[in-house]
Image (cartoon, rainbow, N blue to C red; front, side, top):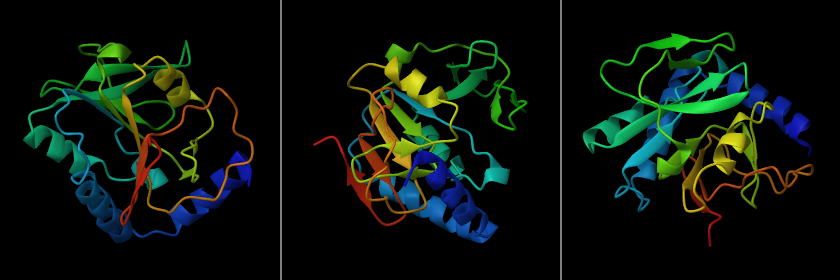
Length: 189
């Protein structure tokens, strides 16, 4: 299937989930993440969930990171340059919903892409090769291409992989892992 076909299919699949489903599956994904050997790093980049899109509730992961006293970095879309900037999440960070309905920091301490060790990547679908389908704006592919090569890219998905996304291209940045409620897929090896 193409990215557009998968985008439509997985938006429908997500819309079929109840709030309880989203919470239960999100908690299972957070628990799966605890099985990975990723917790010695310092800077973790994580998206803040768009509730209306029935995205994975990242609060559970945020709680894990906070409990492990990690530096939590959250994205902010710069609509003028169509890029993603990263800001340290602190007790003083003010979060507001932007024009695209995405929760993001108003301002704060910017963190350079090359400081980030682990990125939790939002997605709608992924395939068995580690390619992903997002919302189609390319923000994460651009952002990930500026991270260090050794930065771990971990997708989070309620659903299992597709066999293959037909229309991937060289600008698509592959995942190292994708975590579902029942399985950790490793694309790094």
